[in-house]
Length: 77
Image (cartoon, rainbow, N blue to C red; front, side, top):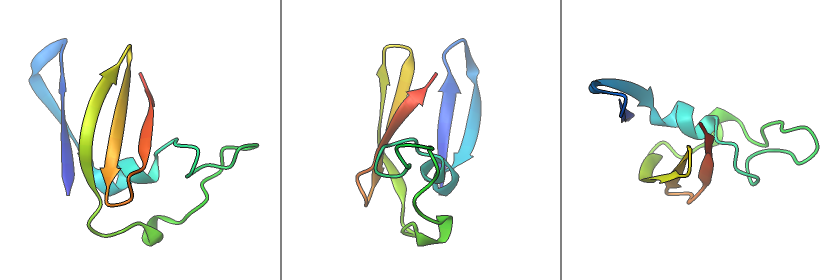
């Protein structure tokens, strides 16, 4: 599954990102170690039906919510 992202500065351009890669890179506290930021899971442990549930702009950052695990990542400026 892929997520499409449009650039508001260049609205005719689009970037396709693999959802599983995006979820694997999620900086949410449930996915990363507090002291070192190391991932607490392996990519093969993610549900195969992982998809983007919602995307929100929060200030200058993007917040992505994933389903079925409900994880939320942000701080992607």
